[in-house]
Amino acid sequence: MPPKLPTLIAIAKGELHARQSHHPPVAERPHDRRRQAAQRHQGGARRGDRPAHRHRPRQAHQAEGHGEAAGRRVPRRRDRPPRGYRLSLFKQLKRAKVYPIAVGQAGLQTPAGLYKIQNKAVNPAWHVPDSPWAGSLAGTVIPGGVPENPIKSRWLGIYDGVGVHGTDARGSIGSNASHGCIRMLVEDVQKLYDAVPVGTPIFIH
Image (cartoon, rainbow, N blue to C red):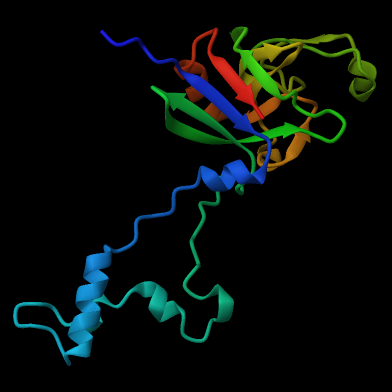
């Protein structure tokens, strides 16, 4: 029996990974386009085929009079954040899912390196770091599930107080916004939480 391949989380703190993890929609098949072009060149479609003009790509129609933006208008779901930093979940060495995230801001960067999920928790308490940015909350403990606790829904601890957790600051996703942790949408972190056990490798680069 072949060895069981591990689950792996990979986080890239840059736009390059976001572009690499994007899979564009499948376009019409090349041989269809070649057949249509040949029909137009010969002056019409063969008997039994639909007229070539009925298969005119929508991109070509949009391209008339719209300049550089023509043919590249792709609607985006309004309930999802803009593209930016991404967390990739690998199963059996294949990318199974990609989630949008936020990472550490300047001066409080998310630490790069190879780690493992150290612990997991549902609606955990927030042990506020004794750091200047924490202000009057420094050193205190905020109970889980209250509005003042920024760790929403799920927590996956990585290293020295840094972890992956849910956030209600949806507008921060895709940017450098946290104090070192990896923020995820609540619905996404709940799925990730169920998919990875303690000990799962996590590579941040």
